[in-house]
Amino acid sequence: MKTFQETLDFFNQALANLPLDRQPEGLYTPVKYELSLGGKRIRPVLLLMAYQLYRDDMERVLPTALGLEMYHNYTLLHDDVMDKADMRRGKPTVHKVWDENTAILSGDAMLVLAYQLMGQASADHLKAVLDLFTTTALEIGEGQQYDMDFESRMDVREEEYIEMIRLKTSVLLACALKLGALQADAPATDADLLYRFGENIGLAFQLQDDLLDVYGDPKTFGKNIGGDILEGKKTFMLINALRLANSTQRDALEKWLATEVATPEAAREKIAAVTALYNEIGVRQLAEERIQAYFDAAFVNLDAVALPNERKENLRHLALALFGRKS
Image (cartoon, rainbow, N blue to C red; front, side, top):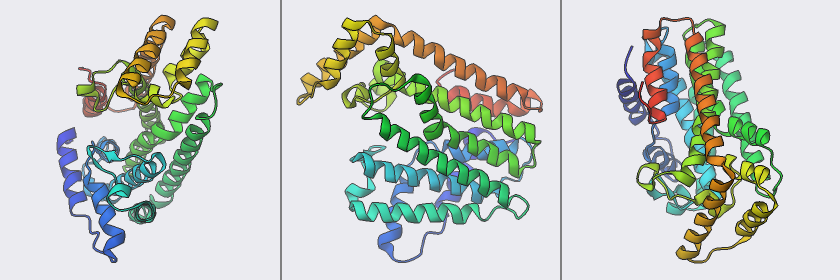
């Protein structure tokens, strides 16, 4: 079984060789640009690693892995348009290099290309692959809509938020693992356990992202601290701060959330004030406990997969590395 790096190198070579030479260039050049922006390629690598738990001929499922990465990047491209984001991974976004209409149309092409690649699954697995992928794609759209709905609500409950991040983030990781297992003819129980492993890893990872947005180191976090606070984004931190705050703390939180910032100094003041309230209310510890709970649940799922532990070690190492932990 190949290591994460060997599997990633194998996938990146296939992605680099993916033929995208159709015309017109104005449609496909932005697709190639979006794919060139990089990223960890976690989803296709998870698919290939899940497949390798049972079989070694990774070439057989490369089209599915490529389709998954194409789909993921399609969602990022459209997210950047919706969020009016100027940068993605340190480079200008597609709609900034070209324009919004081009970005929308090229994103649509990426979705079609993703389905075209998924359609190359072997005939005996094709229906299961397409059924799971289509359900997942719908769920991601549902999660995105919930996220948009939450922007105008101050009464979002924690369970609603967890369901939103499950749909928006976790199900694609879970889908990747199950797509690999399904095409390797893994036992149905194992395929479901791997799905739940991915789901719990995704939940832990998103909650950690919420936490690091407040308490992370900008040098290692990869983006500025406090962005969610400035946007008034409904995160695990904010939802629980509003839930647990006393009347004085809630009034202060709502005042700061309503405060518009026009200068870097004002932004820093707002971030510091909200962070101080989070510290008073105790949401950091709550988030850390919840992250650990989902992390532990993920490894319970992986441990239950009916394979020798050494066969699952690469997946375990990958999950630990995602959280900056050691085995």
